[in-house]
Figure 1: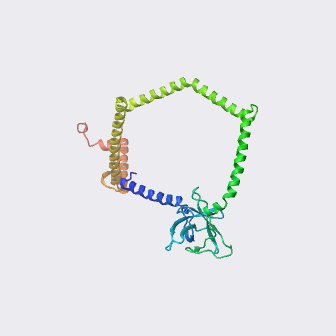
Figure 2: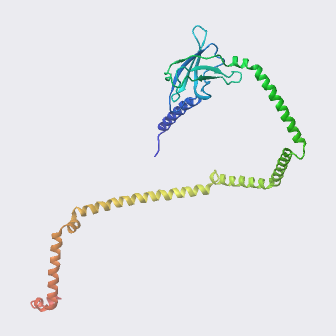
Figure 3: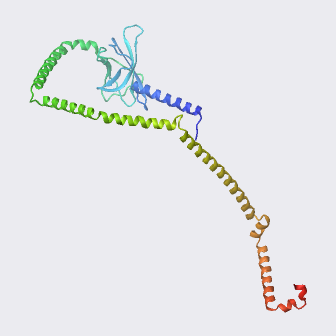
Amino acid sequence: MKYSNELKVGLALVLSVVVFVLGIRYFEDIPLFSGTYTLHTSFENAGGLVAGNSVRVNGVTVGQVEQVALSPDAKAALVRFHVHKGVRIPQGSTTSISGTSVLGAVRLDVAPGPSGNDALAPGAFLPSASAGGLDALLDRAPDLVDRADTLLFEAGTMLGGARGLLEDPESDLRRTLTAVRGSAEALNGLLRAEQDRLTRVLDGVATLTDNLNGLTGPGGDSLRATVQNLNQVLARLDRNMASLEQTTASLDAVVGKINRGEGTLGRLVNDDALYLRLDSTLTNLNRILLDFEQNPKRYLKDLKLVDVF
């Protein structure tokens, strides 16, 4: 079955639209086959929060920020975000901003209220808790500096230990590196030894490709002649099949007329009375011939020899 170009183009456009819509929902962290509902909150400082940042509840991503805009009085940042329909946000929940825009990890956190409270309706407003984001990071800066010093000291200790392992010829690390180096050298030697064979194989592949191009290219007269002969045979076979179909149709028409009792043969085949009369005539004729054989004088007594012969 062949399809028109218009149908193919239409199906391609429909498929492209479906893939485009599903891609947008996927990259916006929206469930592909389930809906979401929208909630609102506000902050004195957005802290680098932008549309597309994730929304988390207890560390689990449940939605995405849709819009961050400045309030009409320019005193707050209004945030609209969506949450997956299957996620229940109870009344009494609060929002906060965590992470820092410097590291590109800003997100909107939702602290759930008491589980016994009713769920928030779509479009409800959630109050914000204490400021987060960069301010909170600055408050924790001294502790982070202390931890960074500790990590650097531990890293230096680890590097010193690694250096000692590398300098000790009996260490497992030194032995492993030596074995890896030996394997690399053996592999390199094998490739050099098999270089000639690989070259011959590649040359053979190139020759085979040239031969195939010669058969199918402008110089492939033999192959083209074979294909033309095959096409002619197929054309004759098609003509013979068409003639056979016409003969079969004519034979079907004749058999149909016989079955309907048309013509002499049809009446002979379908008329029982004609068959019975013919059978009776043959019986009588057989009886006369039998009597003629038994009593020829009865039939020849009045005939002269000259009249007979």
